[in-house]
Image (cartoon, rainbow, N blue to C red):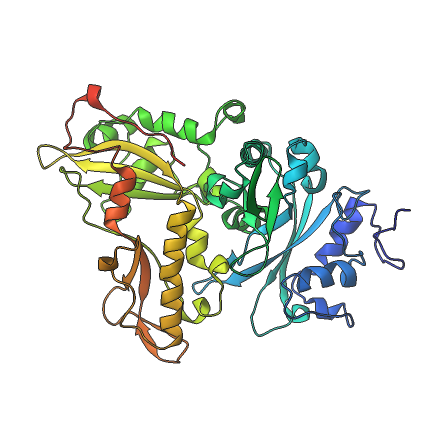
Length: 464
């Protein structure tokens, strides 16, 4: 016997899409406590807000059914916590989970049966997460209906197929969130040793994972892409080719060219500031705006690497400064560093020419950090957090420790300070990827001294 999911006495029509969306709009700018006055709240359960939203506001029985919450209307209800940024705006606190991956079932399913059956039409309630408040007190920022655009859907389907193929090949234990673009196989469970699950074509147990939208994609949904431009102008290009192959083909037209030659060919005038080499990369892609649509949605970190003629790399790669008051209250997988390191990277490589004056574009490399290296970075992060808690800001792991990543200042000067959990002001620090580590990633693109010989050009499209 089928138990109805919608409780009696609701004040909207749960079978009518328009009625559901209008009822959701009442939430914006208010709290669940404005509408819900009773119900159990488990403060240790991150799903507390979502459960109250379902059972208290929409009067839906909490469930894990493989069909949408509003089955007749075809709408799946989701909620997403946001964090307020220091200089304005909001950022997703975590990925948006869209259903546990059943390793036994996915091998016999299609994309439509596994993913689209439940997630074709999403109603997302964005709320402001504040650690000191209860779910009933969180401010609701907005409610958004999201139907995946056709171009995004092509990429999401390919992501889903890549995840499925890992299971079919008995490699579910090797799945990584960074191997896909918009749709991620995100860890799902509690603690360091997460719940392990059997997989059908291997005896090795695999982490429990769920399909999830990446943080960057969620931010796109929340903000909308106002200042971005797509690389893919015709979505038919994605029918038979991966987005990385399309991007690599565009860049390949410029490999071996000097900066002056690229400027002449693209007809662009790059800036002379820190953004010069990144703006040149965007020009090669035919992008005039500062943001690239597909990269924003996928969370692709485009980083420029400038090598000496010898192939040496002097500079390590920095990331945003550590927010001391926040990092001490986060788990590794909630941290900003984890979010960055589990994204896909696009390294755009330039090298000093043989004449010592010119700079040559050598090629690109799409790259993801492997699980073993990610664990090493995790150890640096955990050491850093423990030292911040102890009030030790002088003995973070240095580059000489050779642990892939290190911590050192990245402020404008010695007066560039930020507050720590001890209530004192401290130098801004950030995590860096070691220059030797970056050099190892891109060495196949520029292994020796640069020449301008087009016949000797090397071009690596993607790895991992």
